[in-house]
Structures are given as structure tokens and as C-alpha cells.
Length: 171
Image 1 (cartoon, rainbow, N blue to C red):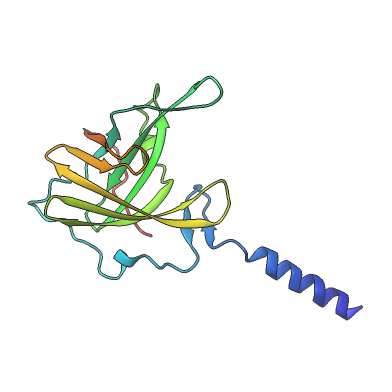
Image 2 (cartoon, one colour):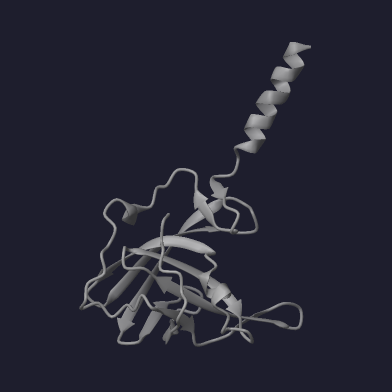
């Protein structure tokens, strides 16, 4: 009898620990063991950097999906002065809601080297295993141009100053 309980306990431990992330009530995911490369020495935003922490950077193209492309989303980035960022998507037709922009889907860290922005984030796809993702963008005054691996070009993001954004990055 004790062997059976031990066996169930081992199975529960094995299957319960397969995920490499922790999910918070807000729907945000972070890795169980934080292994961000940029976390050891977080970047501190300088006054000469063109990143605006009181703005969001919204894609200039709409992301469409679904059978009839009925879902339309805008992708965005929000940067903090302590080297952290979050990104997510908002409904293309209701993109003035502060709640949508404060929702943190992907969390990560960034670095700036001259006019180049380097990102390292953590992404969980449909509650499967999470992966570290990396991004690279060119910084212009009020615009970011991310290098797209899919279409071998650039995806542009415009700065949109927005009041009421959460300025706390505590991960």
C-alpha cells in the first residue's frame, strides 16, 4: 500500500515539474530559474538614449489571424529605466485602453549599444514549455525598427506617449 502512494507521489512530482516557468495571477510567466543574460548587470537608461519610458512603442502594421482574419492585434513594447521591458498585443480597434498596455505578456531585459537595442525575453506558447527569445532593433528618435527573421526585413514601431502606464518593473 505504501509503495503505491510513493509511486503516485513520484508521478505527481515528475509531471507537475515539467513546466520550466511560473505563472502569476496576472497571466504573466517567468522562468523558474531566472537565467536571463542581461539580468546580472541590468542596463540603466541614460539621458542620451532615445527610449522613452513614458511611452509605448506600437507596431505600425496590424497582426491579423483567424479563419477570416477576424482578429486584428497591434504588438507593443514598454520599456523601463532599470533595463527591463515587457511586450504584448492589444486589440487593434480598442488600442486606447491603458489596461491592455499594462498587461505584461512577455517580460525581459534590454541593453542599448549606440543606436542598437538588444532584447532578451521569456515567452510561453499556449502553456507549453517557455523559451528565451532575443530581439534586435535599430533606434531612431521616436521609432524602433526591429529586424524580422520571418520576412528578412524590418518591422517598425512608433512611439506613442501614454498617460497612466505602470512604471513598476519588479521581476
